[in-house]
Length: 193
Ligand SMILES: [Zn+2]
Image 1 (cartoon, rainbow, N blue to C red):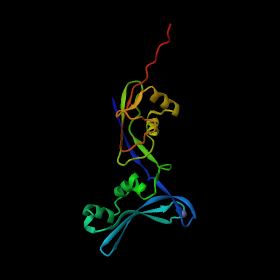
Image 2: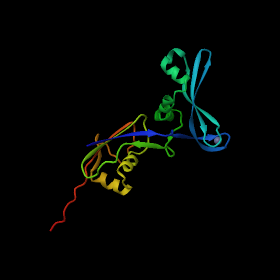
Image 3: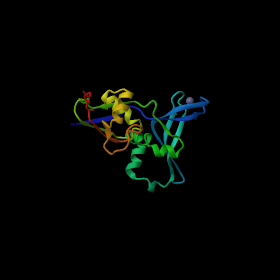
Image 4: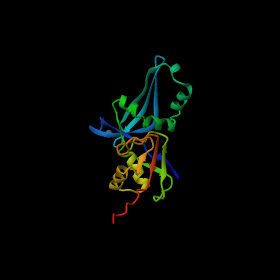
């Protein structure tokens, strides 16, 4: 039996930055706006972030001094129209944020899981999909779906009753866009007489 889950992010990861107005480190979240600046026929493109407390903005550089010819027309149109799916794609881009020295923080990330609770008495596969690399611990998702405590999750992974199909260890793994889990209910070993 296979169970499919779709993860729907309800907000975006934030970045911690010094806020000039608050004079301290604050979480900055993406706004719904790109900013494009043209200078001497070259373009700069940013995704605008703002401090969650005071609204002070910070620009995450997406493209720097590029010729409009280098920018794909379809992409340019999506930037101009502040395409929400494109904002989401950049907002979850781990490498982009690492390159800009603004690592993503997932502490306040909210999401919904669509899918049914599996019957835990027969072997099953759990398949998680998300349109963006979600970045949170895979264990958190699995525990939510199977309604397990941390100790129960640890015990099941140690017994290999819960394992990822690609063989990579589950415990420290993060959810990206896809995760495929095998669950085999542990058998009860009868006491020796
Ligand atoms: Zn602020």
